[in-house]
Image (cartoon, rainbow, N blue to C red; front, side):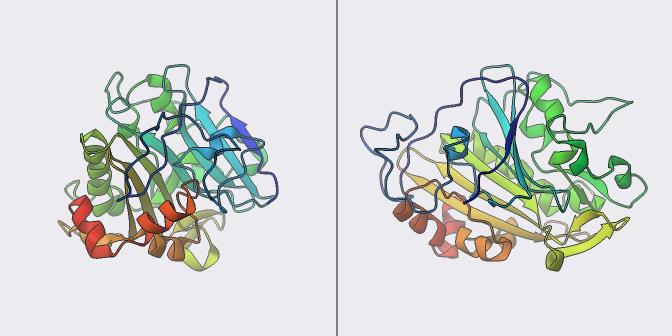
Length: 310
């Protein structure tokens, strides 16, 4: 795999410690100490990320990075105890984000600040993205599409700095307002975001690993704004939850439209991770040991829905 260019926010803090690895129904090791795996002790894992240039790529929320010259991984950090805020893989040729990934738990859900607001710069350009790879932020205005957060503002209220970073244009995808919020703030996408926060605060999970994005390949586009800003035809969410005994995983695939879906069950959009990988072409949770990854990602959908209560 080619070396992935990686950029970090200006505040560099020691990485958050990795969670120990285990299967959904296979108990965590008694020697689990929540430290990163050393090269000599990594379990069998043929598809894990190459961390020789960037150790953070070993974190469990990271999918397999694309490994092409057009891929840029941006890791946003904050000057507080949480360290890494969220990360983005940006396609420099398509000028669009492939995904945002991050961790959630009861601590990151603390509300220590209000939602970022700036009248003069409501959606800032990402300072870590070279200007040659930008899509003009003005393309959103009067386009009929909202600025759709991928890592939501409401997921990052623990500090003003972390919240502002969620408003970077690299964390945005164009979304219809009915998809983004809905007629009565009841769209499946918004309800799923609320549900993810509920799961993250649930005592069942120690940590929730989140990957979200919209499809940017040519065959999975709804349209382009001014023939440049890509509008996804589908949006997806992949979740890995660490429990006291192991892991659970679930995927969601939602068509991007401008219709009122009302109270349509979130379960109707759910699938196992392997099926979501086929649809997106993304290898989620690649840093799990192979046998663990195989088990949690291929569980029958009926069992997945039962485990997550959808």
